[in-house]
Image (cartoon, rainbow, N blue to C red; front, side):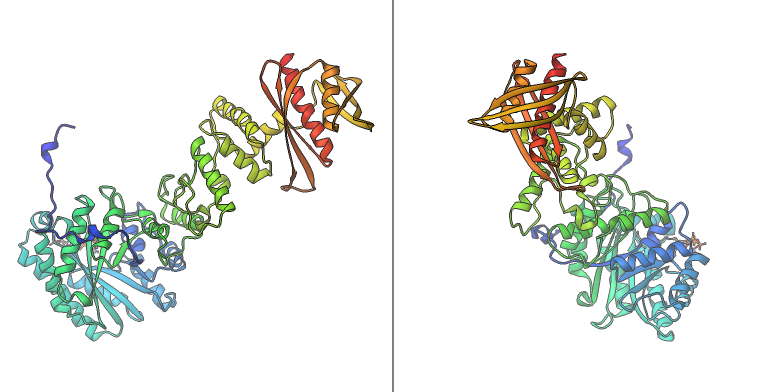
Length: 555
Ligand SMILES: CC(=O)SCCNC(=O)CCNC(=O)[C@H](O)C(C)(C)COP(=O)(O)OP(=O)(O)OC[C@H]1O[C@@H](n2cnc3c(N)ncnc32)[C@H](O)[C@@H]1OP(=O)(O)O
Ligand SMILES: CC(C)C(=O)C(=O)O
């Protein structure tokens, strides 16, 4: 790559940019959203949507809450035309939704576009022509005056046809390739169109400023928007709309800074589908607002359903890392992140928190229909005790003592590392059962009985390597008595009995679960778990499990 001289900046910073937008900290209210999925998104697909697919997509957009939807370029194809006619003739457009259609500034295309709208209760009719230096010189081969004339001719024809046609039309104009246009010329052509349309408070006009190709850093686009916002004629009667693309990966930043700079309306698509690198992603924009406590007035509470529809009808894929929508965007595999999330969730449960502050999670995944288990804490060789313990507790009700969590965490990591794969919750549970629960070899515990005098005396029936035996012992408490019986009879010494028990609330039947940790003579720590309907038996089983681990290690 040694052709850097080939490139130069092709955008135009406004003269003396005031950059007032840079003083604003955040966006205080949602812009008007206009989905252009069915037009800009559709025109970028390998196989554009068919009629049924467009209908299904339209209905999903309505369900999400879009009130303005660009439904197509009706002069482009039979499918586009028929789709619009179907929406109108089958009365599929809710009263509070306005459809929008796009047309070039060419007479036959404009006429066909208005024809397609017959019977529509209301519509935005969107006129565009290209204004950039590159397009003027290379494509249209026209002077600035001639380019303005194309826009004015289209704008006048809009007035004429609308006057002859029944219908409640709002007009929109886009200086296409705005970002490669000298800012003063962009202003001149937009004002020329506004002068033809003469917007009023009851008949506002939309001026849409597209980053048809995103060419600059976002602060330049924002400054361009601010300049236009401050200098457009009839500003109070103009709705300033933004239409960012994502060529430099800054579509969302362009839109957000553009709103700070005066943009009132955003045209974009779900998951950023659209030409080349796509249009701006409205899901991200809306949920970014949501994460600041600003109601986006769009409902993404079932994002999985939206993704399913989107992928099926567009034949595109939502990338795993796509903000909010991607499969992995709430997933934490790494130990320290899992630990912080698990603790954050617990803190939230224990405290009366008004706001969401759980570390690493920008929003609560549940708000968009994602589950903590499966979507958030996921286990592989990068994971740690915090996440693994959290998962066992949430899914199986097993609340391990902290030191046992650590020991189990290493056991799980090792399996994942050896097998080079993510482990599912069921596999983790199986490892836990295999490693700790009711371990019965070499010593199989059968039953016990106690007699109580000054202390507790016990006789425990067991099988050692299949041979029936009775262990006897005494102690201050029942478990103490059994522990001394085991140590006497097996000759195994251990200390530091760590103990925890709780009722098992997940799953059927009421069971008790006990965890016991012991330190063997060589200083190694061993854990066992017992599960039983009887609490005493569960702790005896836990003790035998721990002792069996020492015994198997001893050989
Ligand atoms: C950035 C955007 O997304 S803009 C929207 C782009 N979307 C689409 O183009 C999808 C739908 N388009 C189509 O189906 C077709 O282009 C049609 C039906 C609209 C027009 O088809 P055609 O006339 O056969 O072809 P085409 O679009 O190539 O026309 C090019 C001519 O229109 C002119 N033209 C292109 N855009 C415009 C415009 N907005 N206003 C006026 N003239 C225009 C070109 O200069 C060129 O003129 P020439 O014939 O003198 O060379
Ligand atoms: C028609 C215009 C708004 C457009 O789609 C673009 O410039 O990207």
